[in-house]
Image 1: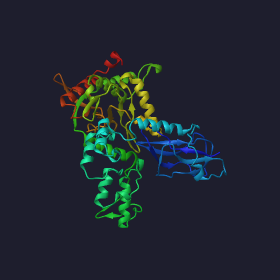
Image 2: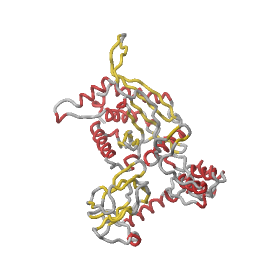
Image 3: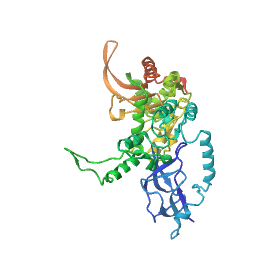
Image 4: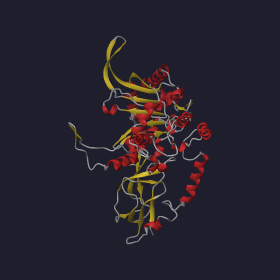
Length: 454
């Protein structure tokens, strides 16, 4: 009996995914639980497994194409089994374990209705939109996570643009510049939203140009080696880093600290009888120190929500991880309540799942502060960019031996540079300085962690 391979919902707010590549071809034998393709949602690429033993009868969604969650992307069945694709896809959608997804869809629909649809919009903005007759569906939100706020509604009401068409601001601008009628375009983005690729396709059609075949040749005196599409993980980084710099006033301050005791502390944890050794990374220790510092300096553990500052009770620490596809920032939740060893175990799990493409979007959400360490690349200091909607990020450089004057004498010490970037709209320079000073105390006296516990 033929069974559908479904596009999974890999996060609470995920509505669609893109098939990166099929690991099996039509006609190949597959085993239940065996990876058959890779899909991409948000910043995560992960594997989808076969729901049953059999033959991959049909690839419904080819490489590079998008599909809604809970929709069929492939079909598994018995060897020689014939499937009427049109009729088969009309049937009730089932999840991999045989659960009726129609109930799930109803629950999701009710949940979204309770939140006013799939649009991220504040209550005051929704009331204002209703009062002014503005449809928020086509508006690009400027609040945290793309949330529509009151000023977005005001801007839409004051402009002459047609908000009845769901279209991204970039796509709208492109269409206006090339005199493309957006009413005639079909959107390929989430919910049928028109994106820049749709407008570009219309521009190419109007000018008689097609998509470029292969890489371009010489462009003036320069020759292109390779054209790399900005999509997937890189596209999310591309958009969020620009958003971060556009929507906050970022300031970076640095402090050089003595890392001699930090090195000894890590060595100390790894010594002794085998059953009493704890192999931990500098990141695990620093995350614990950060968690304690954030509880003492709560303004750094905050976000700007519309015209308010929300200080978070939870201390959820993002850790920048470099993988082949780009930068991921998985989150250690409630780090202040966990030991260094527990944090290390969680880091190991996240790193393993990142490399094997087992992370899901929920692993990357909910952070309140981020740590990024470039010491392993021999970087001394740098200017990290805040990961919105957070308000702070700590950059850590390499540990290096250098001469230091102590009590009038020159001695060799292990030193490390900390680079703290924060949103200067809500955090003053003095507060940033106090934060680094508190963190410096833990780094130079790490045994305090053992004395005070969680």
